[in-house]
Amino acid sequence: MSNRMSVTIKDVSKDAKVSIKTVSRVINNEINVSEDTKQKVLQSISKLDFKPNKSAQSLRSKRSYMIALLYNNPNKHYLADIQSGILKVCKETGYNLVLQECDYKNKNLSAEIIEFVRDFQIDGLIVTPPLSDMDDFLTILDEEQIHYSIIAPSNKHKSSSYVSSNDYDASYAMTNEIIRKGHSSIGFVKGHHKHSASSLRFKGFSDALMQMNIPLNHEWIKEGNFSFDSGFNAGLEIMDVASRPSVIFASNDYMAAGVMKAAQMKGIKIPSELCLIGFDDSPIAEQLWPSLSTIRQPVEEMACHAAKLLLGTVDGLSEQTESKEFKSELILRESLINLLD
Image (cartoon, rainbow, N blue to C red):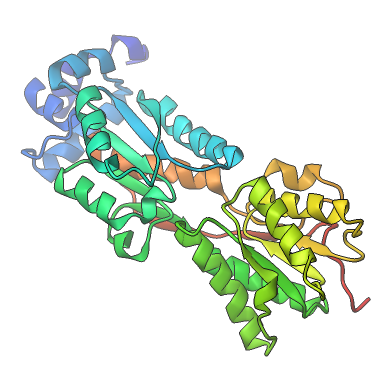
């Protein structure tokens, strides 16, 4: 069949030697189809390059072919990368993406999300931090049999479909790199306290110091919330300490940029008087001067995998895949100097 537009469900039925109803059950991911039959139908669908009509399917199955991204994050670049990764999968599969901003402090969040899913017949959710750390919220989604996948889960929900990055290992490795360059007075700006990634990044940092017998100076440890302003305020607090560190490691690039502004306002030269480290490798990391040493996370790739995980559970035509931890990469730029040179 050279013309894909002419391929119909009848053609698939004939090629697979099964009924049209069976093909429909496979497409709609219904459970009462044997695995052998399902594979036979999927092979015919692939062979004929059959693309189901989502509008017609929606009318028959009462599904919307919409998935929703739940988010509550001040980092707009992170959110844009997440969207981009999900939209790649949506484009390939004929699904649409709905964005749903959530307030993690909202006591009625679970009820509102369940109502949202029911009202709009959302086929599944992709849940991002800090919502992905809220075990009670995710447990309610389980009880309501709502399909979802998680980006950066808490340890409890690593039994669910998830993608994560090696935040602890990456932070540990970057701290060792800082120490290797001769620095022993190192401050740290934590991320949002509700994000599991924040505690993992701080633990990687503190464990690396401990292993090298470098004391943790609590006057140089401040809490931010991943926003520029929180980094700026944390930077001012650290620089008001009588003896300041030679390096400040911030839990994301936007907070590191905030620390840079605070340093420049106080006339502190970067990197000769203060080195800076970020996390995420956002565009701002290269746009700053001096450019920011940071840790590159494959956020778009992670989001793409999260979408595939979700659709693998809700769509009979989408390939099922496994949960995965993605590796990060150290990016060394001008904001970190070697004191031993």
